[in-house]
Image (cartoon, rainbow, N blue to C red; front, side):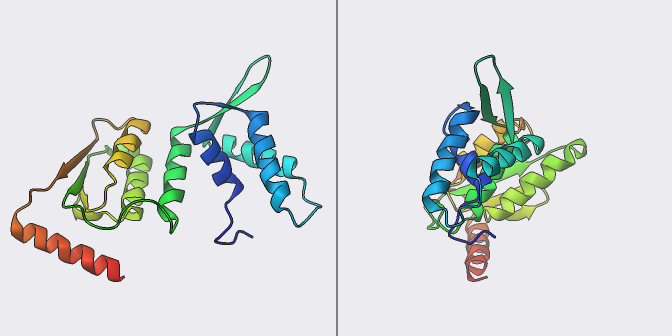
Length: 189
């Protein structure tokens, strides 16, 4: 159903909510409805219904929270919604992260307890998607400038003490050559 050039409704909702702390539910629906009606080829589709169903599903999946007041209903991103948006951005072929080495290595040290297995798996998945290479069981490294994403992610997930992000341009020459070789072969894959 979704071609590579199309953006999903879920992604549209996530992107709109990422810009603000909270948005009125009806404003999100109206904005997306306008976008859909501009591109609609099938007049049988009811954009408002489809958007509301998508939002309802995202609330059930805990990607967004809904807050009801007397005047209106507001939506905001949850940490798993932010994580989903990061995954979408990392999976896209046109993300804005430079793939040329700036001379700095980004190391992420992860020590998440087994009781938070879901978080362990999520972090591992994101690190792999971001093309980090696992050096040791809990140490990952990348030449790409992704430290801000990792710092924001650890704050969003409440893992301030379990994840450390280091940026350095000092490695011993043999280690640096080993890493350069690993990333050169990774780019060829």
